[in-house]
Image (cartoon, rainbow, N blue to C red; front, side, top):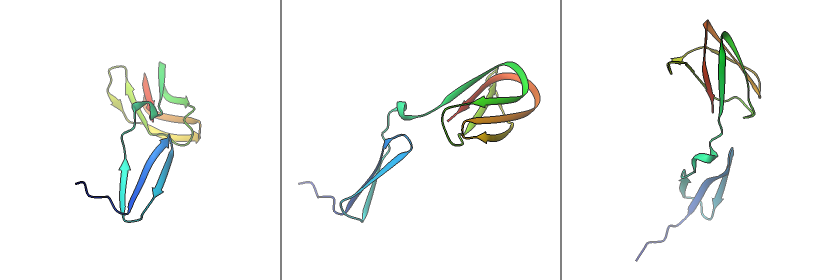
Length: 103
């Protein structure tokens, strides 16, 4: 015999950036984190020309996390500025080319 789950509250993400709460009863919370990778929104910026200032336009909206790597796949730290909800600027101490991954 399986015991019933009393007072269950379900919280799940039905679309990116949206969380839904179903509260059939208010004392237990279950978080569904089994999402497919297709729900992850990301933007990859290819900086083909060496520069110490990268301007990155994206369609993610908001203020995404930024990870930058050079052509040798080494993570490079720069000063990230959010110009708008669709543009990020990253300033480095020296020019180089590589990729920026926004999520």
